[in-house]
Amino acid sequence: MNGGRRLTRSAVAVVTAAFGVAAALGAQPVAAKPSTTPVKLIFDTDFGGDVDDAGVAGMLNAMQDNGEVEVLAMMASNPTRHAAPGLDAINTYYGHGNIPIGSLKPVYDHVPSPPTPGAVITSNNVSGYAELLGRGWKNNIGDSSRVPDAVDLYRKILAKQDDASVTIVAVGGQINLGGLLASGPDQHSPLTGAELVSHKVNKLVVMGARFPSGREWNIMLDPTAAATVAKDWPTPIVYSGFEIGDTILTGSRLFTETHPNNPVLNAYEDYVGWGNNRSSWDLTAAYVAVRGTDELFKLSEPGQVKITADGSNTFQADPSGTRHYLLTAAPDETIAKAIEDLMVQAPVKGWH
Ligand SMILES: [Ca+2]
Ligand SMILES: [Ca+2]
Image (cartoon, rainbow, N blue to C red):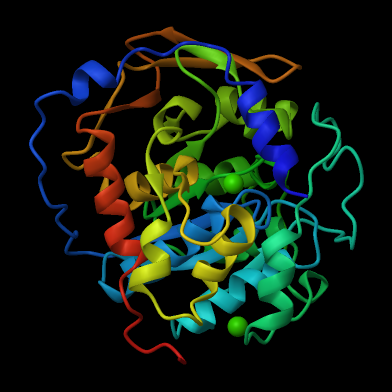
């Protein structure tokens, strides 16, 4: 089922990235400080693939309870009919069932191969726990065909926001982001998609690629879109590369510290089995999107990210560049605790 993704992620983990370990030594655990003004955030996810996307959905709901973030929307970047109801199930559990949700269209019962046009990955089971949650947990969507097209919802929401006020975190293939950049004027705005992003978005945080170079799953899901985003996206981009989240293990505390009805717990049980951890690829990106580098991470020097048709990426230092990748500034266990503290935080007004 979902094991294919795990194997593939391991298979592409071929490039060394030795930084992080040395930087982690001697760092002091410091509690993260919530920001005083909520970050206006759009979460773009291939929910139902790997389970760290479900972890992000839970973490963002907890951060919204804390007043750290206002989730403007969640966007499914994978065309399964179960992603939107699955996301809504988590939001509803936390009492935030009104968060707008969009989806890549059309949606399918069984995602075609390749899952997105131009993908260099030939199969991607993107239902899994999403179907479990969408069918079994309370939500008022039921099927991703009932939510707006993601690009349309991006444009509708961005058009209403203050300039430079929106952060986007994208933790799957970047097909929605590519579609947004390529979009033209419509009933929501006379601006092109690139102009809307330039006006309204302050930064993009991506889980994807490997640094300083390599080949990674999320980029391989749509190398063309990812290359366009890396080259043309008008705002700064921070990449959380594969090497960052890979050794930051979270999820096991869900089983002992959260309610048995917690849909995030049940997603993790479905994917990794009761009591187990999973890597925190997407969680690190979402954490930084809301809290910044905090004391847990730091940014690389500025530069340019280049992506080729097979999904390989390189980084070239450039003082005028607006792309950075994350480095860790604390031990993996310290970062894991900061993330997992949020994952196990009880909903303020959930339904259980
Ligand atoms: Ca809802
Ligand atoms: Ca993901």
